[in-house]
Image (cartoon, rainbow, N blue to C red; front, side, top):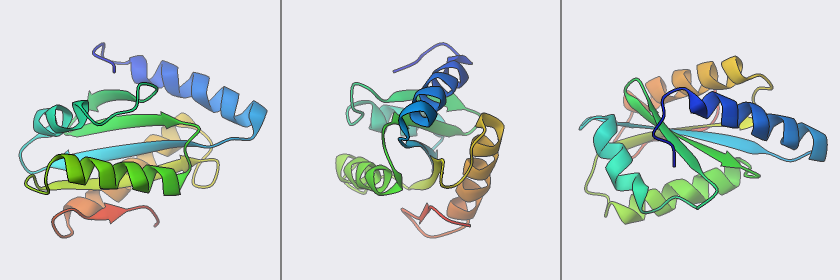
Length: 130
């Protein structure tokens, strides 16, 4: 898990290069909470895989998941929901390389747009497509 701001992009660039070379997936899960990004980070801490990387960006907790397609990211979201006992109002977006976007900025932009849609939705909403 990351604590240093800005290092998520470096990890993302590394994961994307490996995924492109070996034809694998990389997913980003963005988590928003009406209780704030710090609350989302606290809830997620105990549920991340050791290979996942998390950083707070703005009002979202962002989880980078190497070698994970959108279905795997959706399974992780269900694990996050189970961990919080569905007590916390968290909303989620998923964006996956290479099926959704291929560049870091485009991945973050699409993830942010989807998270905005999820935040406008119901408790526990997940947006994985446009």
